[in-house]
Image 1 (tube, rainbow, N blue to C red):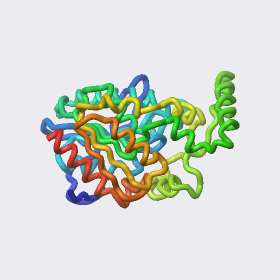
Image 2 (image 1 turned 60 degrees about the vertical axis):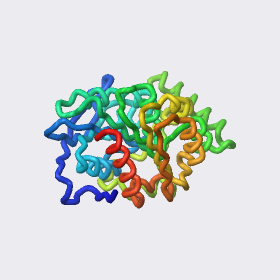
Image 3 (image 1 turned 30 degrees about the vertical axis):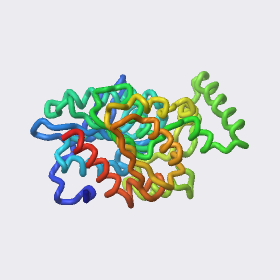
Image 4 (image 1 turned 135 degrees about the vertical axis):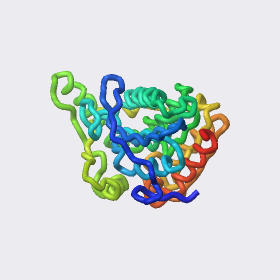
Length: 296
């Protein structure tokens, strides 16, 4: 299916800026409503990314196909509330995703029995976790997902420097106990693949390029792969990139093999961030076809 990107005249659906109350925090969100009862697709971005960094293209494509769409920023990021700023707690994000599902199911134009969930990267892992735990989801798309926090931590932090890094994590906990500010680290290292992507998609310069050290500590114990067998019978589409080193493709294939039917694996050519940019038509088209098959 051929897709266009945001701003194309064919898209007749207006975006509304809203807020969603979720577990004591206020999440900034975009809503693409409809005038008649229809399915809803919920979109969630990865790790420290903001919804303005590439998700509008997916949202407008899905909305133009007749779906209501809901996109949100995680707590502690963007203009969503929460402290510490720029801290990624996977289980808080999982619970917030479930709160967004509850919000969406109560919208007057939404058929609560036809809810689709789309998550990418870190939130691709959340999509697996949530669709395993929460059967209010009718179908799920998990794009370039993190499937093992511990493996990712070990891959991102070289073995020779890992003991010192873990010492810094302990130091951060002691500092917080004394009421001091959390320790932080850049999210995108200059010259890295992530920095290249941020430069391409952060058009408004909103991305702070900072995460708390504790975000990496919390990632170490987050294992979406352990939940993937519970996704079935919810239909699962996993979209992966064959040169992904951010969330390594071999681990994603391993996780996919554990999932029950119905399921489908789509492999794109490229790196972790290519589905948002040069492979958008392929990634967005595959997701849209999946949602049409199981929600319409």
